[in-house]
Image (tube, rainbow, N blue to C red; front, side, top):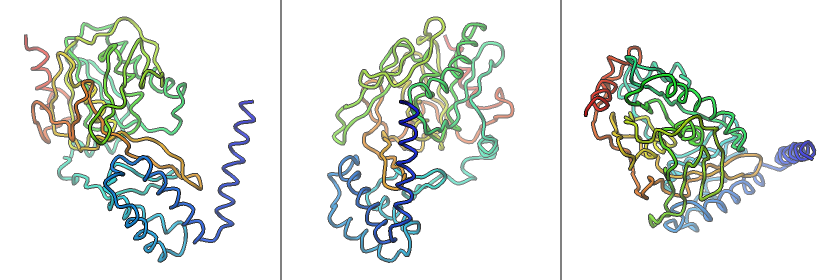
Length: 343
């Protein structure tokens, strides 16, 4: 039955793609944008603040000028800019279309950050000076969000942390999110289960800032409104009272910000670094015609206590004093160690 479903899915996608090829550009554009507007008007976080009749009419007038379906996708940027959907995007494989986002300049990011990010670092764990645990969480991106695939990705990340917990006498933990520009938050938080413990960790608010979603970790499970999304197999007891320092930067965004705010309200925790980018909306996947996907902002992100943060602002601001080559010379790490060693 599973193979039959897979075959039917492949056939369905092939039919969609062939159907688009057989349609003339005008019809393809109309079909695609009609469905895009259906999704926006139904679920976009700020849908009630938009004059949809005006926006649709203007968009349709603009679309007349495009000679092909592919070229018409450039209009998505204009549309998303107009409605303020700065954290939403439409994509297909390596194509992505969204609002214009003001990304900090290369100079403002700093040489050390630029070099580290360019190296495409993986999830890193190490012990500094024999007693301080360091965890670097980079962007984690993947399309298969089935429970088993999330588990497959999250478990080895969690195991790295559990191994340090079991084998070293750690005085405190440093979670580095400076390189984390976004991705999928599930494995990030599951990897940090021991430090977060069996607690509510974050949630979603509607446009009136009323909580509508609650995410909890419990016995290694990631629960969204009580429904299991995925899990890790825990090893030993959680250490959710251990001292933790969260380091953020100006490029920390989206799921990187959610990972940071999951520690808001946690005891023995402080935040060091730069304020984050401000992509703090809950995004959900929707399917559009011709196999395109829509990542749509539907909620505001909030911490375990229902508090919303437009940006995560550290308790101690440190800017462009990174040293990823020698972490003990990194000003953020130095201040983190001071916090950990304070009685």
